[in-house]
Image (cartoon, rainbow, N blue to C red):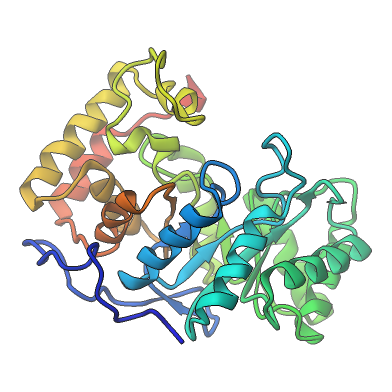
Length: 341
């Protein structure tokens, strides 16, 4: 049974001006996937959110209208005591417990310690392992997580095509691929007669723009690929929580990654987000997600939450509509990138 449409504490607040009560669903590329325009990141499940906390976050997200969950088979192998697959396992247990009828799950292959790379045999074995952990008949959206230069791209593309043909996955996607390699993947897909990717997952946010806007978005627009950006809130910096490079006393494992953006230029972005958000009664995080949603080809930014209390801002980010002038103001103030400095 789906949890969509139920009432919870995170959905009772009446929307303020600038919000839509029910955001338009967004289609992923030319696929048949129509989703809520924000994806809940599963990277924290089994890492900074244990099973019970993860269940609570998933419940709150779906109760608030969310239906798109993003994970990877490697999450969270980096955490002490973990082996990879913890996030998929928790999501699978949640799906089995709640039995939602309309949740879309995306996962990825190439980084699990037992399934490194994108050889044909590895892709098949990793997909089967993900299916077991998730407890689903087919993966809705399956990403090549990182490019694998050691494997011929044609082998990888053909392997993904066979997964579709055999019913293990429904749609193909790529993550962290260059524009050149995306074009090459599509050329191979057309030549050997397998489905093209429908989405690309890049690192994209207000403090990391240039490469995506100059290279990835043009390819996405040309081939009708949807962007599903990760690090949408820049490891938490774009929540406004980290306004100093000094992270002493910060308990979050992500604090160091967020604080690196706390430069003079970065803080101007936060100030502008706060000013625009205040005009809508919206948080800095919600406003940042709304800006990302307004960018060409972006279907659903990914954002994660460790606690139920973080969910309302994410849901609001999918409903907040910025004016053209507000988007332009954020464009102007964020015309820089730390990676180029």
